[in-house]
Length: 428
Image 1: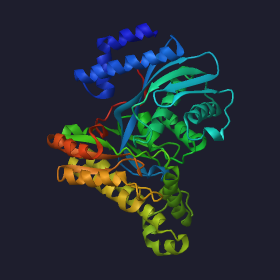
Image 2 (image 1 turned 90 degrees about the vertical axis):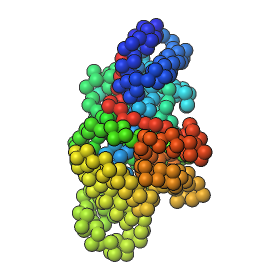
Image 3 (image 1 turned 30 degrees about the vertical axis):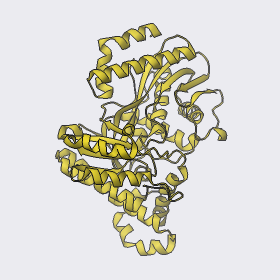
Image 4 (image 1 turned 45 degrees about the vertical axis):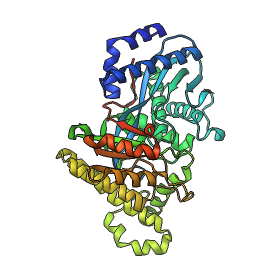
């Protein structure tokens, strides 16, 4: 659509259905706010790239329900896409130039005639743009140029998986424009993980990309890396009179790649002792029988504690799946709380060992525990070390909780979150 046609669409009643679907609200204020956001983002795209045949794409952030740092061991997770998203207006171009701009990093432009790894691009936008094109071409898919402008709400370092949100958006753009929308969600997630591992330079698992690409509330078993088992659940905390809150500690984890990389590396160190690549290939009983030998050989107790976390966390995911089938909210919350406790004690991803003076996540957990009391639970969110925590709290005490926590982190740091039913998608 041209910009004038898109503006008419955004002003129409049909747009309200989009807001209800993606942002999980029919409130007038939410609709009006999103309408203004869409119009502003469109204006920015046209200002930068001129008019043309624009399309709208929304890519969500994600929250983790269970399975903290199990995906890179080909374990099990439960995660969900959420109603906080990055919004993009994009149009196809007739050359090999990919130009991508946003409200945070400005303009990034590459020529996809060159699909080699550029070391100076690692860790930034260009590596994902180039890496996605490279992987698509390597797999026999089509690629080409486009021009895009994005409004970022899944901010870098927020713990809501900004990198996967962006990666899946780019895979979907190549898919939609150059592959007839035939690249399935699971394949796009695997492409994005490959890009993050090889071009971006971060040894991530597949959970973030899968949750964002597939969307909704999903349970995923990664044991078969080529064919992950996916089960969608119809679930909302609101159905049980609870509210999911994400608290942004305002401590950026973008520069903590080495801390993240140590977790899969140390877990694989334990797996290697048993002649395996990852912990999902090791029998839990064998691990517990050989802890004394592991200590003598590996000489790294943290590796053993992180493996201990993995085995118990993997079992917790199975318990969550059963609790979901039983509609047992008390059990779900108890398991989520145990997961957070294990992440703190055994996985040790609540603060960085390289920077013990900065423990914003630990402070957020301590204060949340104090103010939540018996009315809910709190836990570290996602990768950890910095970023965000989750709070699931009874709706009738949300306002009191927000007032108390606002004194610590500011009201803007406390975000009510809903589970959205779709992953990354072209709206029009």
